[in-house]
Each structure stands twice: as structure tokens, then as C-alpha cells.
Image 1 (tube, rainbow, N blue to C red):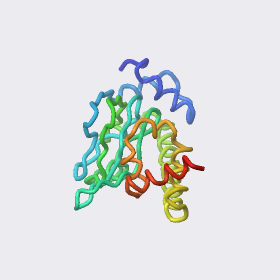
Image 2 (image 1 turned 90 degrees about the horizontal axis):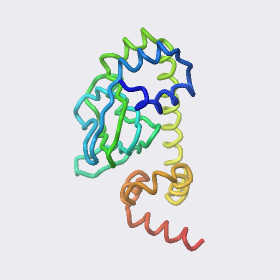
Image 3 (image 1 turned 30 degrees about the horizontal axis):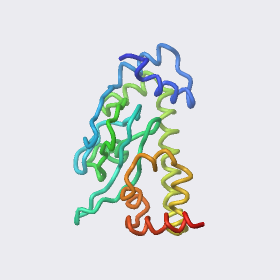
Length: 196
């Protein structure tokens, strides 16, 4: 695989662990590069998530579709972020979530079949992935606490401050879904903020 293409991934990994050139070569021999078009699914509810994906470019949403067809957005992923149904990937059981591309998206994909082999050959990568999963777990817990303790307006302000680049790239109704409110209520919040 062309290491230029996946340089952002190598730079990202270097923030956590230091790999030798040989270890980087082993890593690159175990991953896949893939382009998805806007609207395509990386994984769908009910299918087993076979890849842990690093976003090189583009934007994805991870969401749950309830029995009424209502979409509940769990997260967005943009450049330098990860996208997958982690529960499904780790346990190799059917996914609870869909991961869909909101833009044309380029990914580096870590196949489940080779991840253990990769850990055995480059033990530092097991530590790297443990750190990534720990961070995701902490972020998830903090989000649950925010959902309990902040008003919808406070949650939106937090989202806007934390992820300004995401807000510019996705439709308002998706932000509303992520916040657990209607798009009309989000419009009202934005109108109030504009007056403050």
C-alpha cells in the first residue's frame, strides 16, 4: 500500500506509539484503503462489522434506526477520527448501528480477521488500540452525563464549540437528531442565541 496515501494514519499513530519502519510496513500490509461514495454504508444494522475504520477524508454518521424508522445519531466522524460499530467489531455479532457516508469518504480499514495477527506482529499496536478504545469509552460516558445534566441549548452550545468543523458540513436535522431534539427546536435555540 502507498504509504503517502495513509500518511495521516501513520502521523496519528505516532502521537500514541513509536513504530519502526519495519513495524509500519507490517501495519500497511494488514490494512485496506477504500473509497466510499456519499450515501454508501460502511456497515448496516444487523450485519457484522468487519472493519475498524480510520477516516482519511470525508464524513460519516453512526446511527440507530428504530422500529418507527426514526434515526438516532450517535456520532459523526471526520478526518483523523474512527468509524465503526465497535461493539459489533469486537464481538463479531450483528451491528446495532449503521455507519453511513455523508460525503465521499476515504478510509483505512483494519479487517477483524487480521487484527489479532497484527497485534502479535506489532504489540505496540495493541496498546495503541487500547488507548483509542479507552478514549472513546470516556467520551461516551461524558456524553451520557451531558445528556442528563445539560439543557438542549447547553448541549448545542457544547457541540458547536467542540465540533465547529462538523456543524458546517452536516444538515441541521442531523445535529438535532444527535442532540435528541427536533429540528424545529434546534432552530428556536439558534434564533435565541443569535439574539444574545
